[in-house]
Image 1 (tube, rainbow, N blue to C red):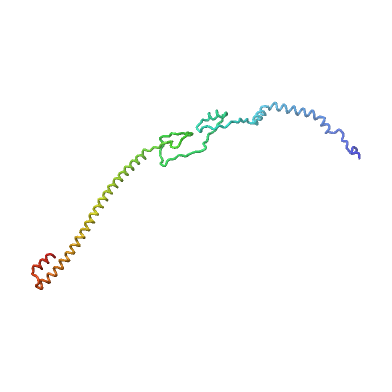
Image 2 (image 1 turned 90 degrees about the vertical axis):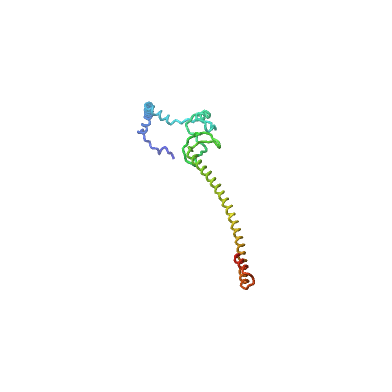
Length: 210
């Protein structure tokens, strides 16, 4: 089957005429675009510069002393930059007794060792209170020693009193025994005198003894 016979001959229409005029139109558009670029070259170049990729310079990291200044760090690394040096560890200092700082021996970034005095507080009032407490303690110790001495004296007196009480108790027992004997002698002498066995003088001696 011949397909060429089925094609439709449209003839020289507007589309073909447009194609014939298209090269001229193309050159006119290119010329207009070039003129626009020339007129607006300043803003366009500024926009292009704004889109320019920022250059990055690589720097080598160098371990420096914590107290080194920023200029020394920049010189060692070969690059200059603005920034902050942050310590890896931080320590907060505080005192048990609040007070006013009268001496500060360190500043930010200083290297300290164990036992170093970093600051001093106003301590006149605390020292005066300490001396007053020490004086009171010394007086209390003296009072304690005096009280102990009085206790020793009182203990000795108590021992003497106990010895005296024991002595008096012994004397009381002896006197009680003597009284008992005198009473028995008195009763016996009274019976003997009453019976006429002994003279009156024997009874009087027993009475005097009682």
